Structures are given as C-alpha cells and as structure tokens.
Amino acid sequence: MLVGTTLAYATDPRGGADAVAAWEQDGLDVVWVSEAYGFDAPTIMGYLAARTSRLRIGSAILPIYSRTPALLAQTAAGLDAMSGGRAILGLGASGPQVVEGWHGVAYDRPLARTREVIRICRQVWRRETLVHDGVYRLPLPAGEGTGLGKPLKMLTHPVRERIPIYVASLGARNVRMTAEIADGWLPFLYDPQRADDVWGAALTAGRAARSADLAPLQVVAGGPLAIGPDVTSLRDLARPLIALYVGGMGAKGRNFYHDLLCRYGYAAEADRIQELYLAGRKAEAAAAVPADLLERTSLIGPESYVRDRVQAYREAGVTVLNVTPLGPDPRRLIATVADLAR
Image 1 (cartoon, helix red, strand yellow):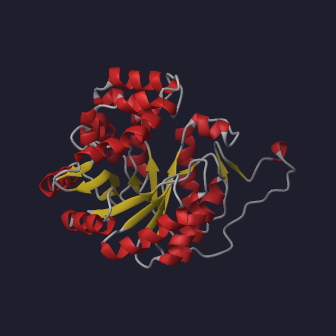
Image 2 (cartoon, rainbow, N blue to C red):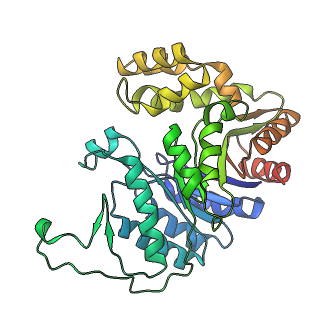
C-alpha cells in the first residue's frame, strides 16, 4: 500500500503544505487537497508541486458543478505539467447545499454529469476535437448561444494522455459507476470490516463492466493515526467532523453521510446526530457519534493494534492508506505507518 494524507481545508494551507513537503522524506506517497467553500484546491496543489519532488498530488475533491469539463481537464493538465506527471484529478458531486448555496448551480443528474466529465477530460488529454452531445453539449448549439462556437482541441500537449481520475462516491449506483470507469475510488468513513457489506455488490458489478484498458481500481481509505499505549482518547477528535457531515451536510432525507451510517447499522444514532445538529446542538451531536464507529474508522492505539488495522485495510482492498497524524511527532507517525504499509 501507498501512504497518503489530506490537507484540511480549514487550516493554514501554506503551513500544511510545508509540513507535507517534510513528510515526503518520511515515506508519504500521496497528498490530497480538499475544496469545499474555502480556498480553491488547484492553487494549493500548484504550491505543493513546487515544494515536493516525488509526492503524487490529488484533488479531493473538485466538485463537478463548479467548473466546466474542459476547465477541469485544463486544470489537471496544468498541474500535471508543473509537477512532472504527478497529478491526480479527484472529482465528486459534492452536495446540494454547497453546489446550490455557494455556486448557485442546480444540483441535477450527478451520475450522468460525472460520467460525461470523465469522458470529456480524457478526450481533452488525447487532444481530440471536442464534440459531445449529452448533459454537456460541445460546441453549444446555436439556439442556446451566439451560434459562433466551434469544435476545438487543446492547444498545449499534456505531459500524460491519461491523468488518473479518482471519484468520491458513496451510493450504490455511483460506486458502481466509479468501479466501471474511474482510476480510483475515494470513499468516506470507510470501515474495512463492513465495507464489503455496504459496497461489495456495487464494486463487483462495476468491475465486471470495466474496460480492459483500465488498470485495477485504486481504493483510498484510512483515518486518524496515533500510536502509543495511551492515545485512544484521540479518537474523540473525529467526533465534530463526523457530526458535521452526518448532521449538517444535507437536509433530512437527502444526506449521503447519514445514509452511510444507516447502512453500517447505526440508523438510530444517525437520526439522533442529525436531529441534534440541525437543532444547533453541535456538541451534543458530536457526543452522539458511536464510539465503535470512531474505533473502526481510525488507526489509533498501540503499535500492535495499528499494525492489525493496517492489515485490515489491506485485506479489504485498500491500495492507498490515507491517514491524518495526530500528536506532537507527525513525522515519526508517517514513517512508522509507511513501514507498516509496505
């Protein structure tokens, strides 16, 4: 397994990027840059390209609604050129609150859009003339514009024709599509012991339809990391984040993270977290996150325990172990988990 980490979008991006550049020396293989409604990810990814020499640099994620397919392809190609072929384009649909509230774009047809974005990006990188008729229409038909649009191909030559595309997906149909056409999968709150029950059928169906031209699907999953005899209390640090996603990232009846907890068997707990969070009782919502879930979605404990967790992720098919080091010595943690992953 490779070892990755994600830059938090609510912290100082320059300081975080400088730390990641040091972790590269300790065995870190991949860094992911988040984008919600704070700083944009590509700017930070460009800085990382200049500060590192070996790390693969991925977006996790760029929402498909906030940029046109051609711009997503251009951005990935530019980052790939500046990093010497180390870019990963991580895509996702985000959710209605961010897409409609922040970007002012209707949240519609997320699966069809994702599929078409991937197809168009690969056309751009092959420098094909863009002609596409679907959710996205290229060129734009005369009746919807000036009628002056013409088919174009990319002016510059990408470093790679096939920049890896990873998709963040949770629902069965979206996961099936990811396993069929993407290079990698970015799940959330991944429990290696329960993942097959939740996503196994969708992954199997998607892989069965997968083109022979594609390499095996890469899977990115992990969690907070701390190693020592007295560190289990650090699991509680994940409570506010999980409460935010399960309780606040969507409305009742349309929250993908709430639905995931239900599929894991925490339906009552998911309802309680959502109820408290939407009522503004965020601390109580965080306290309602099940301790069992915190344990099963983290790598926090004595080294022997963490070694077993790494093995569990490996056996579940994870190819990039994504961790968030906690504590005063993150470099030691990265070096230790890199050894365990290898």
